[in-house]
Length: 268
Image (tube, rainbow, N blue to C red; front, side, top):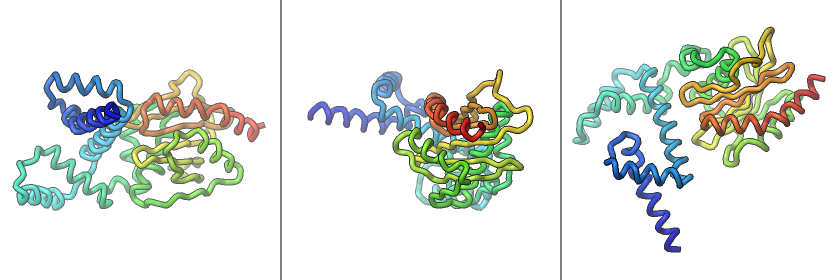
């Protein structure tokens, strides 16, 4: 019992210092202690990864969201009225961008606006952009604009994908949607799962002329998003998520055999 209380206390202390640790504000001794704790505590390491991902998302918003001038001025006045020290410009913009996200004031998140997707995916090989683009358009951007309850609307031909994906997706992730959608001129079968921190998409697209993964990377990263892919004779199949690269790749590996069997039957 004493050991359990000691472990809990160590985690409480570690989590209290986590933001300072990421901002490199700790002494060398404290930083080494926390690094050692994270190396041996899976729960705290996962929380650290979650906070890093949140910071990356906020960083993207700060760089790309056109924050209304009146919102920035309102935040300045509120900080001043509270008697708090003057915020650095980045932190003030971060607060403004976060408010904008929460209240839907982000013009770039309109469905059909490709600028964000294009800028984020430009470092990813074109064939991997196929899956990444649909994930960003359908699971990330469109959902910020028009949040929807869980919905299943799969064509009969693809209905069996839901059972396969649900079996292999990590525990703790719930289904958000399973449907056929369209991004630009292309149709997709798209299943999305979330644990309230991270999104996972299983994206299936019928191949177009000349498309193949042969000789190309089967994984890539774009900011916090991870893409992994394999192909059958007629389809390109992707897992796209903001999990770690290893976890995203392992999910695709677990899905590969049952999905190959599923599509081999439909392709024969």
